[in-house]
Each structure stands twice: as C-alpha cells, then as structure tokens.
Image 1 (cartoon, protein in one colour):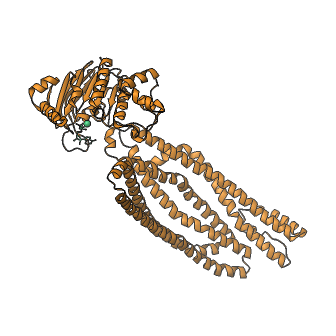
Image 2 (cartoon, helix red, strand yellow; image 1 turned 90 degrees about the vertical axis):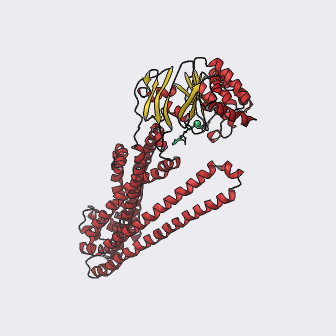
Image 3 (cartoon, protein in one colour; image 1 turned 45 degrees about the vertical axis):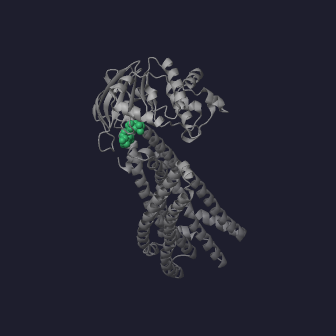
Amino acid sequence: MSPLKRLFSFTRRYWYKYVLGLFVLFFTDLFMLFTPKFTGFAIDGIRSLMAGGHVSANIFTERSFLFPYNEMVENLANRLVSSGLIYFLLFAAGVILFVNILSNLFRVFWRLFIMKTSYRVDYDIRDVYYKKLLSLPMEFYSRYSTGELMSRATSDLHAVRMTAGPGILAMFDPLFMGALAIINMISINPKLTLLSLIPLPLIAVLVFIFERIIFKYFKEVQQKFSSLTNYSQNSFNGIKIIKSYTKEVEMADSFDEFSSSYRSSFLKLVRVEGLFHPMIILFSSLSLIVILYFGGKLVIDGIITIGNFYAFQMYLMALIWPMVAIGWVITLWARGMASMFRINEVLESENTLICGKDSIDKINKIEFKNVWFKYPKSKSWILEDISFSFKSGEKIAFVGKIGTGKSTITELLLRFYDPQKGEIIINDKPIKEFSLETLRSSIGYIPQDSFLFSESLKDNLALSFDKDDNLMERVIMNAGLTDTISEFKDGLETVVGEKGITLSGGQRQRMTIARALYRQPAFIIFDDSFSSIDSHIEEKILTSLSGQLTDVMQLFIAHRLSTIQNVDKIFVLRSGKIVESGRYDELLKKQNEFYRIYLTQQLEEE
Ligand SMILES: Nc1ncnc2c1ncn2[C@@H]1O[C@H](COP(=O)(O)OP(=O)(O)OP(=O)(O)O)[C@@H](O)[C@H]1O
Ligand SMILES: [Mg+2]
C-alpha cells in the first residue's frame, strides 16, 4: 500500500468531519474577504459626504454577484447619515466587527473539525502501530532498534498528523482564499487584476527554490536531532558505567558536540526561513507598484473609486498567503509522506510465524528432531542437528560454554524463531500446529536477563492474570522471597524502578522465578536462573521446588553445575552441537567435555 493510500485508510472514516470543516473554512474565508470591500465602501461614503454628496454602494454595484443587498445597504447608510455622520461610521464599524466575529467564530469550528480530527487520526495510527509491534515476531526486533521504532512512533507520527490536519488546511485554505480574492478583484476591475497577477509566477518560482532548500536543511536537522536523542538515551541507560568509570566529563563533551552540531544545522534552517518570508513580501510588492501605477490612473480617470482601489490592494495582499502556502503544502505533504512511508514499513511487516489453531493445555512431551537453526543475521549455524526428547515429570539440563546456543534452544521452544531444518514436536504434534497464545501460556519461562516492569511487585508477579493472594504467597515462599518482601515498607505493593533497578540482582532473579511459578505451568524453563543467587539459597529453593513440582517438566540451563546435580539427563553443548549426554555422575565418569567444565569450575572455586 502506498503511503498516501495508507493515510487515506486512516482518515477515510472521518470524511464527514473533513467535509464539514472545509465547508466552514470556506465561509471563514468568504467573511474575511468581505471586510476590504466594506471598508472601501465606507471610505467612498466619507469621501462623497465630504464633497457634499451621499453614500453610494457603487463598490458593490459593479458585478456584485457576491453581494445582492446593495440598495438596501445604500438606503440604510443614507438614512443614518441624515441623523449624523457618527451613526454612519458606527454602522460601518459595527458591520466590520460583526463579520469579523462571525469569521473568527467559524475559524473555531473548522479548527475543531479539522485539527481535532487530525489528533484522532494520530491516535488511531499510534494504536494500530503499537498493536502491530506487539504482534510482530522476534525476528522483526533483530532488524529494528528500539530507538528506530520509537522515533517512528513519535516524530514520524507527528509529521503524519501535521499532514492530516494543517496539511489538509494548507491545501484548501489557499485555494478558497486565492479564488475568492481573485473573484473580488475581478469584480472591481478585470484588467487591473490581470496586470497585478503578472509577478505571481515569479513568487511561485521563489517558493519552489526555497522549499527545496528548507526541506534539505530540515532533514539534516531531524537527523542531527535523532543522533542527539540516541546519544542521551544511551548515556542514561549506561549511567552506572559512566559514573563508575568517571566518564562524566567526556560524556558531557561529546554531548556538547552533538548538541552544537544540531544547533548549527537549526540555525542554518532558521536563516533560510528568515530570508524566505521577507523575499515573498518583497516580490509581492512588485504587484503593488503595478497597481499603484495602473490603479492610480483608473482612479484619476474615474473608472474605479478610491474605496475600490483600497479594497483591490487588500485583496492583493490576501493573495500572498496562498503563495506562501504552496510552499508549506509541499513541505508538509513531502514530510508527511516520507514519515508515513516509515510507519507503513512497520505496519506492512509480515508476521512470518505461521501458526495452527490447536490449543494446548498442558505440555507433557517435547521432542527435537535434527534441528538446525541460525538467526536472521548470523552467518553460520547456531544450532546443528539437535535431537533430544523429554516428557512429563522429567528434568533435563543444558550446559556448555558461553554462546554455545543454550538460550537459543529455549527461544525455539517458545517459537520466538522457527528452525530452518528439522522439527520440534510437542505432545506428538508439530509445534506449528498450536496457536502461539496457548503454546506460550503453557510454558513458564524464566529468561536469562531478569527483566521486571516498572510496576508493583504484585503486578510483576501476576502480569495481567487474576491476583490470587494465597497462590502469590506460596510462590513467593518457593522462590525464597518471603523475608525480602516483608522487609519492604510497602510489601508486595512496592513499585520497582525501571527494569527492576531498585532490586538487587538476586532479588530480581527470584522475582522472575516466582513470576513463572505463579502461572502454575506444566513446563518450566530456568535459563541460568540461579546465577545471582548464592549456592546455599539456591539449594533451599531447589529443594522446595522439587517437592512442589513433582510432575512438572523442568528444563535447566546452568553454569553452576551444582544446580543440575539431580536432573534426569544433562546435554552438553559445544558450538551448537550436543557432544555428550547422560546423568551427572555418568558424565563425570566419562572424563570428557562435561568433566573438563567440572574441573574448570572446581579450580575457579578454589
Ligand atoms: N538475536 C540474535 N541474533 C543473532 N545472533 C544471536 C542472537 N542471539 C544470540 N545470538 C548468537 O547465537 C549464539 C548462541 O547464543 P545463546 O544466547 O543461545 O548462547 P548461550 O549458550 O545461551 O550463552 P550464555 O551461556 O552466555 O547464555 C551466540 O553466538 C550469539 O552471539
Ligand atoms: Mg544464554
């Protein structure tokens, strides 16, 4: 779908608001452009009265298709004059005031219709965008960085909203305004109108040239700004490192560089824009010279009145805005479409995970059959020919050096990715036949990085599931957290900082264990879940778990071998391959890879 079509798909449902808004906008412009003519009428009236004549609606009589009440106005005005000049002046001022109030009242309404609608469109797009992001597979997230996705949701969305609101306005307002001004000018004098429009193409050229320069500079400003925000985001994420390595001064210096580069780009933009507007006005005044000369002659020859002449000039001034607006429209739409394209890229990303509809309640058997896998960005195989199986009530473990693919196996089980070769079978059916939702919700996953949301401990435990106080108490006890939580002033209501920063590493890790237990799954994955917990407490937790989770399938990944002493089978991985498997003591006896890991650990402990 093209960006324009995509934008249209969001604005379409509000079409009547746009139509209403444009309708009201037309009348705003119509009323606004009534003022010059009426002021001209008043000027002529005063002049005529000074010369001893009476007020004439001459300004309306020639080609007066826009104002059918000339005679009525003329009669009224003359009647007022006969009771005193002041009444005529008050009348003229009153009409102008009234029309201005009306026109500004209408302005409020089109603003409500068009601008408010643009915020609705903005809301709709953001909603769809966020939901789309949630639905996209992990593979998508290895292609786009968080900053990239965030900037699309903020500054790009802003540009799109500017198109859906001011962009629409800037397209139609100049059209209405230009057309109405020209019609009014023609009604005063067609020849003079033609003459005064001669310099306008020149302005169009000027607008075109400046628009391109402004666009170029604007893009530069946007790029500089995103580097600046990226840099700040990064530094606050790593604030601990910066402080502990006392890098504050260097960081501040680099920030200064980014910031001043942004500033100088912005100044360049401001300078060009500063030149642009006076230039437009200067070129427009060329028209004024033309009408001063030719229009002046028409006044002297008695073809048009002074009031006409004044009104004509005002209409010419009113034409400047449509000229400027052309540039604005082009910029707004160009920017908006570029941004819509970037948002659309995400909206059109396909969910590459194809899922069946079978629901799964309880996992009781898992089988890997010759599974080969690599990540979208990796050059070589991460997992090679992995085969294993285990069933209800069993515990297995994966061990191996760092980066050998242990966590990757768990990611395949959760279907964050699909293997390129081989098959994963769950309960005797290919994993793809199950719906993602039921598959994932039947797994208690404790990821390697103990991530917590910046919410209360309670909310972190339950996520969006029902809160059951008894169950919560039990899992907290099983995860060895009871004492810790009772020490917090707010207990379970304690709100943790961003990413759980206000908890210790071990507390965080135990929270993630409790979170998985809370769902009472039939299958739990412990990805290195005891690394920050000392071995004494770990043993306590493991003992309490083994009592509770007798028929729960458990998959352990562990660096510390003591964690997996009692599992049914250990698989030893090296560079993505299973090199040996067996029980703890069997593997030790073999004096192979596992034994070597064991020895290294013994040495480290000593
Ligand atoms: N999202 C990813 N995209 C590309 N490559 C990845 C990705 N995640 C991991 N890898 C690579 O895959 C390999 C296996 O990673 P994995 O996380 O499975 O290792 P691991 O055995 O769990 O290591 P550790 O013991 O350190 O946790 C590593 O070489 C890693 O660089
Ligand atoms: Mg890992």
